Length: 209
Image (cartoon, rainbow, N blue to C red):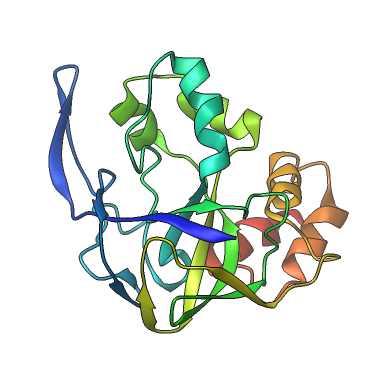
């Protein structure tokens, strides 16, 4: 498993199809090492601090394996960080990333906290109104990491497994449970039993346990 590319970006005014929005979604590739701390990579920021950012969502990851699927769907190549991710990964997907897994990337130690939930900004930047639903239904959501030990990451870095539990809840399974949270209290309780689960997901899911 490895990091294909690293991207960062700060909030800016973005105009798409005559509409404007302030967002940190658009990110630029970084050629060399980038310092990462508790709030994410240096040079990265978010505009909507209510729904994005914070220690539990310090780093957004998206698997490179999904890009061909979306390129076929939209009919053209996609730019780097098309999903607003900080790390584009290879070999680490929703199927084999589990909430609570710990990895060393470069010199940083990180932990999986929750699936990435696509928001309206993704659809806005792509100018594709149905994209949020398409991402959720496809299961190709990506996921978030918290930074346990600050360090430096760079394109090409190996993603080294420090602690993983194959019996734990994968990101794919977490997506499934979240999608039917009103009908699956047992699944919700399974998620809530994971100490590493993000505070935002814990707060939302507790009402369905």
